[in-house]
Length: 244
Image 1 (cartoon, rainbow, N blue to C red):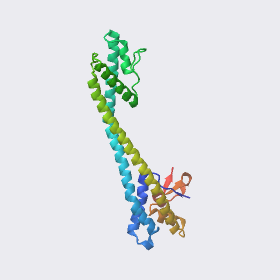
Image 2: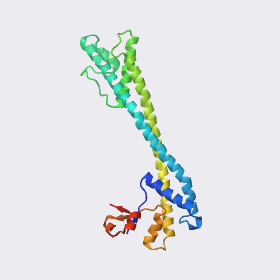
Image 3: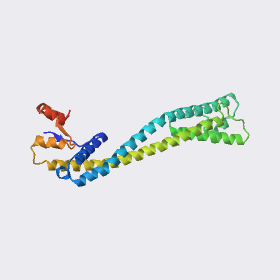
Image 4: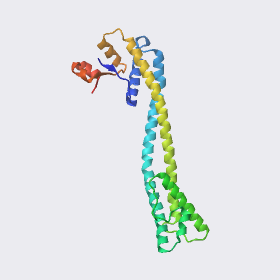
């Protein structure tokens, strides 16, 4: 015997609500298989659900689109920070700077390696350290680091931070849209279950196959188990899904 399967995707939820809504428009209240109260709830819930789906989709698309430029900025600032640190180490190796110069930037004299710059947090941390350290050196009249200079580094760092903050705002917007959509889904799932219960209750006196046929007109979905497929008629197959 096929079982009723509630929708588990947004497209299936929309289809279920719209099917019920169309029946509510086409039939007079006394012929409708669900209550007018449920019909009014459909009219109230459906527009907000569609809007929440669209807002979530737009926020995801916008975040993905802006992320392309953000990744370019991220790669660029990683290169500039790495080169700035390498220039410091090379200047010390040549004797142009004393090893104590590293203290201004929070760098270690032990391994003379570029620190990890894999994460965004590490890039922000080292970018701030380098800019502040060079600022202190210049205030003391020391020779500036060049190729790149701190001014060039700061331009790229500020641009990176601008995109970083904007990307975070897009992430927050996406999270809010996801939370709002989840809330709508809970309401919609409850409404669909109520609608389908009312429809099945309305047709409870009909023979089983006719009851399912009538119910599917309202958007209800019935699924045959795999071992039942062989016994399904061509007519039934067109109206009832298989759980394969």
